[in-house]
Amino acid sequence: MRNGRRYRRQNRPCALVELQRCCWGFDTDDKFNPIEFRPDSRLIVFSGLRNEKDGDDGTHFYRFDDGRFVHLRSVLKPNQ
Image (tube, rainbow, N blue to C red; front, side, top):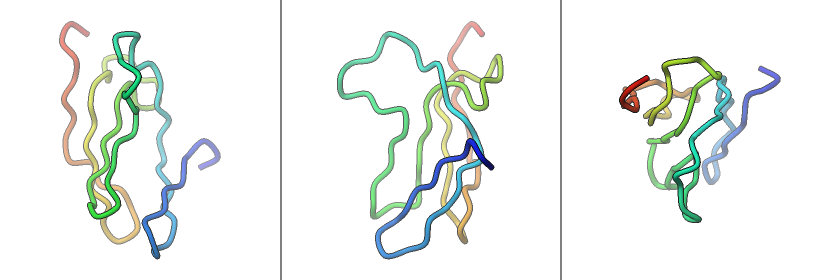
């Protein structure tokens, strides 16, 4: 996907994330990162809208399995 992003785990191949993120709000601090992960974990967390889809604003949890990202769950912001 041309708009995807690649993430590389240490000593492992790259993986393509086939989604766009945007619009995580103005109420964040300087430590906020819209993509959170740890090198020793298979979990990756995305914040904001996935693919700019209305009603999808929240925190989205994925697991990295067999070279692809598997959606686990999303916690949406209230009042969407």
